[in-house]
Image (cartoon, rainbow, N blue to C red; front, top):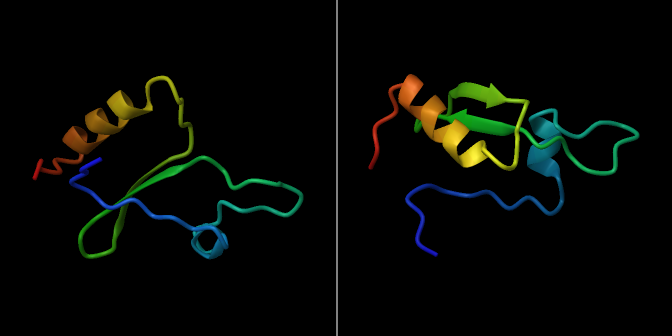
Length: 70
């Protein structure tokens, strides 16, 4: 699959811990989406991810943030 954006794999949960999505007593990280600018600034955090509509929700959020398509 060819994507025009990076996807992070984090099997050791180091990034998940740094972003606060791993909690004591919780077996799996929270299912949150972070929109991060090219300069590393967090522009948006979606803490209410709905699997059925998340793709559409994310596209709408990117438009709202005025992030151009590449």
